[in-house]
Length: 318
Image 1: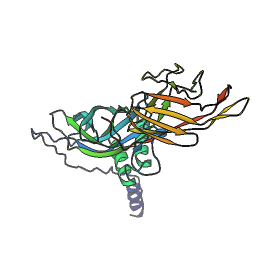
Image 2: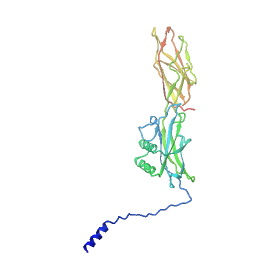
Image 3: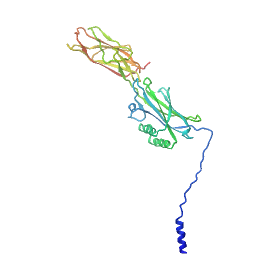
Image 4: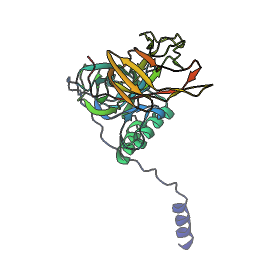
């Protein structure tokens, strides 16, 4: 009996382990009615040189004319029927006055590195928080959502202020998502450009005004002064001059004229005059200068300097 018991025990130890098997139910429903996509998150991006990184969200310093500023719209989109049901996504961009600027047709991104970089940017600029970032990464990794994006151009003849971006998506049955809306701030800038490096009055006579006339054609060195506000808001100018001093006898000329858009100002050396303008964005404007040599000014070569500054104007552009 003892030998039999030992054999049975050894046989029991030698049996293979049974594989564990679980059975679960599966289910699906075809309703005949579509469920629209969902915009999980959205944000905008701009080049680092144009971004105000001192505060969260997107505040943009636009490029002066004639350059443009590229702004990109991103949306992470899911769909109750799966991401293959998503057929298109859009970003509608509205001017500060509520009028439509552009509809951006977004494209789906499949490159994992590009997707991660875009999400990292949104988090770094304070457009999404850490929990949202983790959720988006999970949804995309598990093929539950996709990233869509596209870009548009801002030109400085368009207004500064708060722009609204409305992101939405469409599925195969034409179902439209609820829009997800956010804003970005386009900063107001005024930027001065001139097409002259000097104002040469040429030969002048004492007590006789001598003008240098400008024109509206911005052409460097053509001898006809032109000023250009390359910003996105109305501007005004401040002008002042030093004395023009003779090279040989050191006598001075101290009285000058300047005229802009019909406003003529007589001023003296060291005095600053304001030219109200306004200088409207993207429009070159002529500016005129004159010099007054007083009686008794000796023949000589006279030189000095003029300073022209630009500032925001309170006057609206027509």
